Amino acid sequence: MLDLGWSELLMIAMITVIVVGPRELPRVLRTVTQGMKKLRSIAGEFQSGIEDMAREADLQDLKKNLEKGNLENTIADTVDPTGEMKSALDETKRDLDSQKSALNDASKSVESSAAEAMKPDEKPTSGGPLPGTAGPGIQAKPAEPASPPPAVDAAPAAESVPTAEAAPKETDKKAAGGEA
Image (cartoon, rainbow, N blue to C red; front, side, top):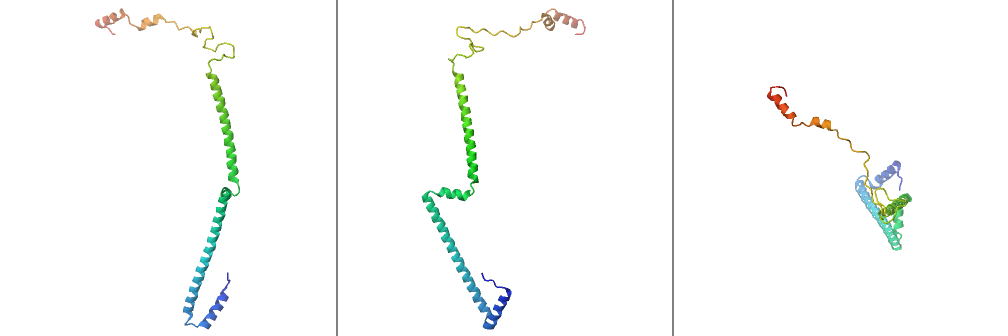
């Protein structure tokens, strides 16, 4: 505001001392400082009044926008002034929609293949019955084993199972005092 250098302040101090005198100087300085405080408070009130009027004007603009339905645009301009977030969200939405449609197509194809598999009345397109099933008027044959069962050898079984003749011989050896 006022640019006062040291030289100007020194000139004002000398004139004040000459005009007022050294005795009255403290009272005059007190009065000047009180006046400065009052001026500052008045300036602060004036500034807050101007800010209040500006806020009210903004609120009235918001109220008009709300009545007109432009609030959404106002919020969008405030939150995303460059539009980068909106474009990113739109791109993400397009990607999700394409994935959703792909999943719906896959779901429909699975449902149609499941429905075709569930139809029992349809004849097979290959011309013959499906493996393991009998066609009309044909009886199913039992499955033949791939290889015959292994033959059982009788000789090793006789060695592993003690017979009635072998048991008395062992007891005879024990009774005779031989080793078992």
